[in-house]
Amino acid sequence: MVPPTSLIGSFVAADYAVFALMLLVSAAIGVYYAIVGRGQSSSREFLMGGQSMTAVPVALSLTASFMSAITVLATPAEVYRYGASYGLFSLSYVLVVVVSSEVFLPVFYRLGITSTYEYLEIRFNRATRLLGTVMFIVQTMLYTGIVIYAPALALNQVTGMDLWGAVISTGVVCTFYCAMGGLKAVVWTDVFQVGIMVAGFLSVIIRAVVLQGGVSNILNHAELGGRLNFWDFDASPLRRYTFWTITFGGTFVWTSIYGINQAQVQRYISCKSMTHAKMSLYINLLGLWIIMLCSVFAGLCLYSVYKHCDPWTAGTVSAADQLMPYMVMDILRDYPGLPGLFVAAAYSGTLSTVSSSVNALAAVTIEDLIKPYTHMTEKHLYAIQQKEYVAAINIFGIIGGPLLGLFSLGILCPYANATGGLAGLLSGLVMSLWVGIGAQFYPPLPEQSRPLGLTTHGCNFTIAADAFNWTASPTEPSLYTTVLQQNTAERPFLADNWYSLSYLYFSPIGTLTTLAVGLVVSLLSGGMKLNLEPTVTLMKEDTMLFCFYKLFKERVSDLSVSINNLQDVLSLSTTFLYSFSCHPYLGHETSRKAGPHKKQREPIGKQ
Image (cartoon, rainbow, N blue to C red):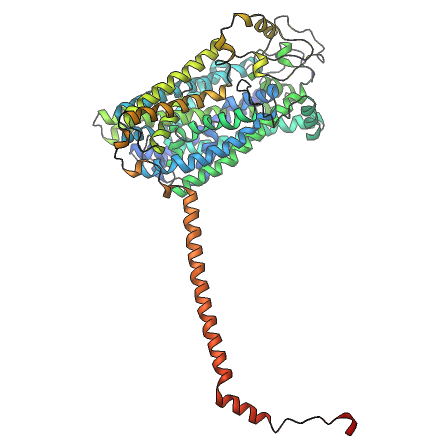
């Protein structure tokens, strides 16, 4: 496929209609739950859905919450540049779900908390709770802004869709259904939006498969281009994606989301029982795998279509996240409405993530910053929640690693005290900020992150003189790569070592630093003398493994009883038969009656 210009198509009325319909249905769900729940004025009912949700809708909502428009646009671009090894996140998802359901969920559900940061005060002290709350609010505000603005900018530059129209409409609709319907509206809207996301992916994948002559051709192109690099066991921590960076680093990143992030915890705590809560996490795993499969294969389709003419190197797009919408407008422009479906899929991801963040911010603000310091009634709190959602749509930063370390310290280490918790959290935050900010000033060189080759030798148009990207073409290096190589001597020592770590290792650095410092400081400050309620730490009865062991032990015990009973029956039966055969009267009578009827055969010779 050879793109002639940077803007190869634009939205038509059918595309806008599909996009508007998605927003309308999302808003309608909020209206429905506002009407149904009109008699409910409790803040807990509003924020937690009355703890009446079942596993399946919560599972789909968990899937949608952090599968944002960035996932729809950026994941295929990452596969296009670095290969299908990105799909190994499917393995880390398994570890994440097991750890979240077996370690964090039982403690949070048993305590019946609304905000996860309530736990920090129960386990440590109020200062720790406030610091954790502030970190979460800053994190969520920064992330939410990126989720809204970055996809809108990418889609605007490729499809011509109005930038601020998309941003404002997304924010208004999301704020509306969050404020009107509470958590129930958020969950059921997420269910609808997961369906839209999958449909948008499938529309692009099916068309690409038809154009490229089948799935086998796409896989062959990917293999020839080095994109089927699943089992890359390079141990270098500087590589962007390897088996180790994804399965180890990715597990820490996603556990900080599924295990302790308010947006996710608030969902499974809303289930009507712990069984439903655990089931929701495991069912959610299927949803994550489906979204991952779609996004990875979409990236392979992207490479198959543009394997001989990379739009990024050619200068027809200016950023990697514009590649996917560029292909959509290229291969679907003759099918009005389908580009709109893909954009609706991207914005479904945005809505689901923003609504999750907004609802979580409401819960944390009320439970951690208002309730402890005021004496407002439930009716006043409910009214405040419906007004403060607009202020939640802002920007994000990644600080989940230290928070994961803090919660792990509290749940897994009975002798960790408040002094150790605070010291560990601050140390982990300093370390993660150090490496994270350093990586922004000194991004890793291509020879360290190792993107795969891209080429433009199949393009039949003039390449812009200022076109550049992060990748190295097999025919000639890009301008940006050349500049970076020339400036290598000017980079400090840490730039090519510490700051060039794969971004997936930032979270483990924060988590492990928090745990190590927290444990040492707790031991030095009298943590061994700490007396805790057992309910605030993980107990063996909370784990599925213990439940299986207990069930197995009960079955073995029942089986032993059954075997003993059977042995008793067999013993009685044997005794009875023996007694029957040895009775003197019965034996004599049998012998006597058999005598007269018994006739001896004559020998053959005498007959």
